[in-house]
Length: 509
Figure 1 (cartoon, rainbow, N blue to C red):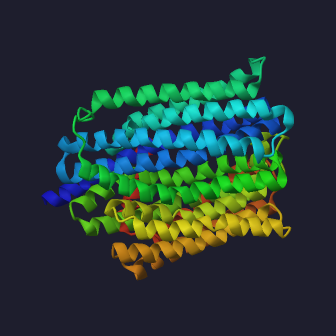
Figure 2 (cartoon, rainbow, N blue to C red; figure 1 turned 180 degrees about the vertical axis):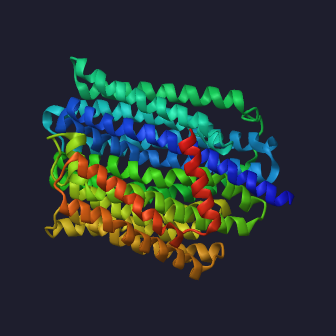
């Protein structure tokens, strides 16, 4: 009875966290998409393309920070589940040492290889080279501030303080929107001014995360003596996590650089808009994982492997269903949505890029829950070697295709094919590390794909029979509700109750 009560409390906490995260997501996504429209008009297509490719190149170094934050949160969660919060100071102290090392590596790489690539390889108009160099340096400074924030944001997520996480994310998005508006009144280079605005916002975010985590989490204190065993374990875990994250960043930014070399900054602008759209949709799926992740890691830490497997299946299905509910109407109405959002300045290839990228992202929805289970086990080596090699292959294959005369769309088609191969490889690799029921897993995936086919019918028929208009957009969005009738095909009784409880909480708030 006590165990059942504990599980119910954990499920309730997951639901509460999910509500905070999705309320945050709704506000942040709206602000971010509107900010892109304002920023595109304030900077112009060329400057926006430069900003996208230069900042994207710097963010390629930032994958180290993303891996570090995820890794630190894993150790926070594992320690909380197994030993309580008394040993968190050991994790925090080791994290600070790793943090300083990472900053040194990133600055060194950026100021050598990165600076050379910017000035010798990137395709940038001659009169914009100085602006591009300013943006590059400011982006590095902003990245350093974000890295410094890592141990504190990880602690907030580990302690499941999702309310604060939601508030700060909304503040961040609102400040960036304000910066895009203010650009209209700047007389000097808009590109450089925006770079300074983003750096200032990064500093504000660091101060907020640091102050809150220090006040609310008493165990984030530096030890005079570092736990060397833990430090080695964290370095090993983070090393393989960084290796795995590098493949995805290499794929994303490598695609951006390939498009820049073969087609110029106009196509980079199209890819930048595509990234915004894809990220917004993907967030509806991945944010659910944020709510589940602390519970999954702690369940594994205490040896409750049955609950770990159940959370894996539930995460996979629920995140994919949320993705479909958002993605399908956008795919059907992508041209009209882009015209409303961007106006008459939509760059070539944008609509096709968006559709192909959304499809690849949908396939990848099944990968994120698997990765979280691998993180919980700590056995990263085999998994990261396999998945990283597969994902990295996208860039050389795309380069060969472009050299042979393929158009820009081919890069995204190749991405879809490789993502399917990677997903199959990930499932079988997981099963060798942490045994799951493969038959059940693939059955659940097949149910999700069947749901997709059913959910597509009504929106597709409406979008092909009605003339493009705001009325059609609303009808297509509402028609996706008809697919709710197929949800019993995918979810079991407990998962349906979880979904309905989540919806009721959101409606109530």
